Amino acid sequence: MTHEQLQAFLRVAQEGRLSRAAKRLGLSQSGLSRQLQSLEAALGTRLLVRTPGGAVLTDAGERFLPHARRALDALAAGTSELERLSNTPRGPVSLGTLHTVGAYLLPDIIPAFAQRFPDVRPRLSEAMASTLEEGVARGALDLAILSLPVRRADLVSQKLWEEVLMLAVPRGHRLTKSSRPVTLGDVVEETWVVIPSMSGTRALEAECEARGVTPKVAMETDNAEAMRRMVERGLGIALVPELMARDHAARGFDVVPLAKSGLKRQVALVHRGEGYLTAAARELKSFIVESVRAMPEPWGAGRRGGAPSGQRVR
Image (cartoon, rainbow, N blue to C red; front, side):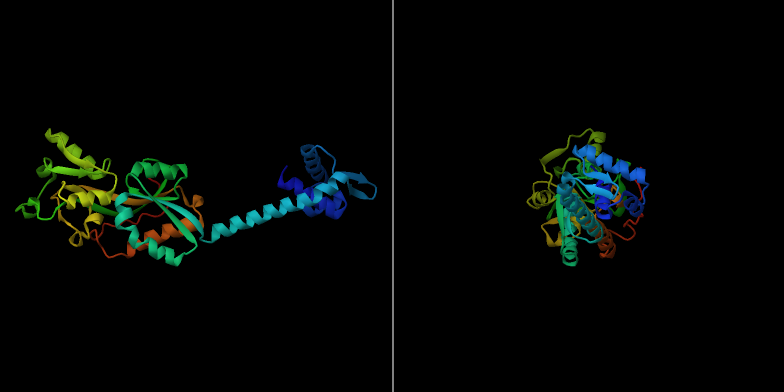
């Protein structure tokens, strides 16, 4: 049965005549009759009987009437709740992010967002860019902060910033005392701590392959904090984004810039489109974009993005 069939039944029960009920509903009398016949067919019983004095409810119709009213009331309440949800930021919103962004940027953003929108509950998950992209496409994630490029043409992307990759080395490492600029080719034979599939790891593997060298990987991890702490303990060196390196003086590692490396990553906020976002997700998206724009420049002037929301990545 449909909303229209229930509405037709209730209107006839209220008006007592099909002609008046049809006029109130904006239907022809034959159209109203078809709605009633379809409802009776779905229920397997007669609900109304036409008499010279008008439409009269059968015993089954009398019994069904309060249930029909409750059903329409429940639908109206549900519709009202969804309309309220679409306009009021509340409830859960799922945000996927790169490990480095989750550890080094979001702690500066999410607490302020929670203070402004206490009825919104962000759910944070961390993964590789490809996993995040698929999570957004499947609807498992409302939003994701990941590195470009995005391979799916059905997702919407807004670039947040661009940053170069740098070497994180243990304190006092010989590379910090180099008298000339360090290139990636100079360090391919170092011992490494890596995050597989990270842009820096792919660049390292390509450089090693070009030079006929097998990378000396002391440890693979999927956790940025674990990688940093292993570097601090002297296990090896790592390629890290500027975001992760900006507070290195307060931590236990040094940073060595790479000369003319061209190694960089572009970070973007990705979702399926405005129509798929709840009010909570829309507010979190806007808050992240504005927070990044308002932050002191930690990654170099002019590296921030600003592509219009809704630009599709091809």
